[in-house]
Image (cartoon, rainbow, N blue to C red):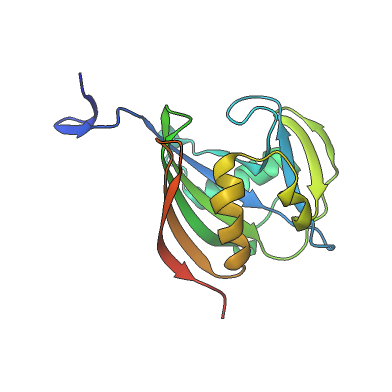
Amino acid sequence: MTQELAPGRPNPGGYPYKIAVLCDLRDRDGRVLLIRRAQNPNLGLYSPIGGKLDMPSGESPGMCARREIREEAGLDLPFERLHLGGIISEHGYEGNTNWLMFWYRAIGPVEVRAGPMREGSLEWHSLEDLKRLPLPRTDREIIWPLVLAHEGGFFAVHIECTGTDFKSTLERSYPAR
């Protein structure tokens, strides 16, 4: 039986869509704030802070980024300090989900205390650490390299996660000028 996203519109992959934000916060030394996740998805791996949009309330991606930064990092950043740096779609992530994610970078340094929080442990890491930390495969192989190549610019990428060899299509690329 084919799962449907809306009446008359089949979803041939059978995966539900989830919409989320990822928030790239850096300190004055250029270190990035990551969560060592204590729950799924990505249990035990390092990810930027973020989370799913509250779709029933009509929350926008920018509103979600502000809320997640407030909830997870204790900061109330105005929209003016949030740069939409990328849009990431993943088909068949972990064999069960399609993700649509909005990558926001905080403009300017932030101060956040590292330590435990409800979803894991907040930790500051250098960008060089990204090469050795346990990260989700799509983050290590595709997302972080695009983020670092487009600092201050914008990218849109689609990642096909259904096979053993992930394939990505860079749909838009606007490096910073």
